[in-house]
Length: 203
Image (tube, rainbow, N blue to C red; front, side, top):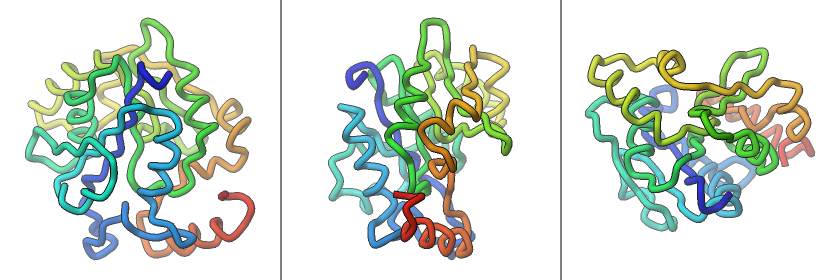
């Protein structure tokens, strides 16, 4: 698995609800979120890409740092950049603000890669988790065509490629509380994350 899948961390958000503070570098439970994700990725992937429009902040990490090819900040442009720079058939993409990403959950998603499938995506009662999913290199052209039209909605791409959904009951087998999908968007989210970090649930 290490050789056929690249790990991609998306760190290009504008973080407007954090007064511009870089969410990847926020500390949860005494450890910055990027370090938490990197620890999971380094166990699973030989190649790790970080997509950011502020590369200088990440020079201390052993990462292939790249920037968006389209001058628009969005998750889809980050996915596009990761697909452009990766050299493997597949990549696992994660947002930079999920402090409790579980290796076992990532392995569940990776285990559902199969020939003919372009996206492997978790689906819970809250909806899809497109920033904790696998995308194949085949997604690059359809995403690029969508970006040219200035359509930034990730789910639009689902109509153009082959998608495999992983249901919640399967996801909960290795992440009973689905903490892998808990992201930090607001100060309240950070407060909740600190609580999880000090409990047995999040670690």
